[in-house]
Amino acid sequence: MDVFYEIDRVGKMLPRGLSIPIVHPLIGRIGEVSETHGFRLKYMSRRTFHDLLKDEERFSRNPRQALREMGAITNWGSDVVNARANGNCQDIWPVKYSVTTVANQWSSFFRSGGLPQAGAYPDIVSYPYGQTFNNLTQGAFPLTSPAGSNEKFIKQFGAQHKTGTNLVMLIDILWAAGNLQFGNYYDLSGSYPAWTRYADGWGVMAAFEVTTTLGPSRSIGIGIYDSDGFPIDPYFNSTASCAVYRLQPPGVPFMELDDVTGGIATVSYIDLSLLTAGVMALLIFKPLCIVPTLATADWGERPIRNTIGGVIPLLKEAGGNIGCLSVLVLTSTTSTGVQQYLMETFEG
Image 1 (spheres, rainbow, N blue to C red):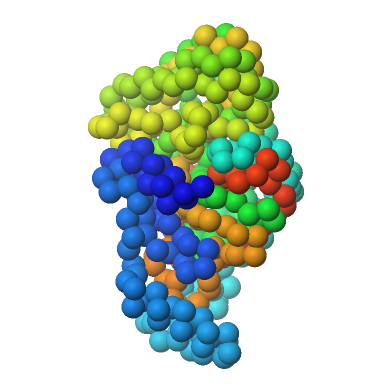
Image 2: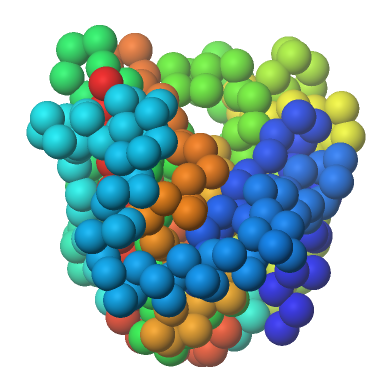
């Protein structure tokens, strides 16, 4: 698979103004994707790449040198290193068990077992018709909320899969609803719960996750109000006999919105009336970063100074809790094997 073509395709489907950082398994942050430019290489030149290789060789011989050079960067040292040295940090190592998916198609691993344990989606037929998610939700990556007025940030995100994979997308799930039955139309007007992380909907996306195999291909969709308060009704044709865990729309990790739509602020209906078989869940989420081309021995993380390309903020909701972090994966095989993730954070 041409993973950079896939990244470019994902980027061109994003809402206007939204970009997602790209983290290379061996180098660190190398660029971003956006609706305007698709995949764009940033932060490095050919000379930079050559210097990075020299750094890796030099630091492997003398690990202490890496620590000294990190300390030489003043703002990184005061904002990140000092925070972590003073105990304002949390590092986690989530592990997700293998599931059977479809090669070269996007799947969600929120319901895969491991650490954290498998998550579950609330039933759409029970008030309040779905649930807002945060870090206390079963299945969320086990991060604690920051203390008091502190904010929390991701310093590094690492990923490694036993069988290798194509792309990993780290996401913050804002809201989800399960048990969406074929043949049904769900009117959520007047009862849809609002979220307070990314409350304006800017950059927020939606995807369906299959929980019971779908029937023949049919048109399905949702009605939304975007970040500017305008209505839009994105529809797509589902995949026939679509497997469990796989995402819909087919081939992409979220529904494509109108060119002028900045993201999803609320949902007014879910339309599965034309489906003849199958059950799904709807996920509303914010993409945080993408890690491409994971070989079985690679990690998309390097905790030394040459990967400093910015940090990822974890927004808090009104009650002070941060988000429900999980992963969407563009798999490379039908059985994914054990997945391991490493996340380094700090707060301040």
